[in-house]
Image (cartoon, rainbow, N blue to C red; front, side):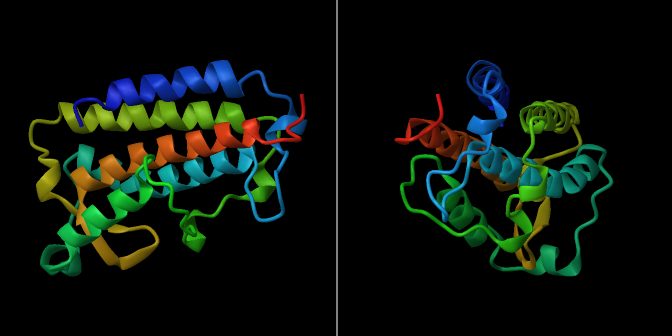
Length: 184
């Protein structure tokens, strides 16, 4: 987690310089019916991050209490590695997002970039609190996925997933902008 600041710096810079100047017609443009717009990519990241914020915040305060399943699940390590691999920005393989993480098309408006910036600022604040709490050792804290309480992993893997997931979908948004027909 030591490099989270640099990752978030890059995301904030890219958001400010690349997505900030976009018009609504560009943010909402989709290269096809089954593809996401830039705005949907940002909405998806916001929704995913917000679903993790409560557990990240409780862990940063030392108040997170693991459920029985989180404590005993023999699959936490496997799920952590598998999901981290799935969301890796270097992976070319497309995966369907669980319903809980789908972009909210009703929130794709001219303010999506501002809301995304605010979301990343909040993520940075929470990760800083996690890092600065000497009583928190991320690999020992087990949590459940917001998509399914049966899927468990440790907090260290969760933070890595969140950061890689942000980069993956920022890259997806950049690819949308490179598509033929993207509004000038």
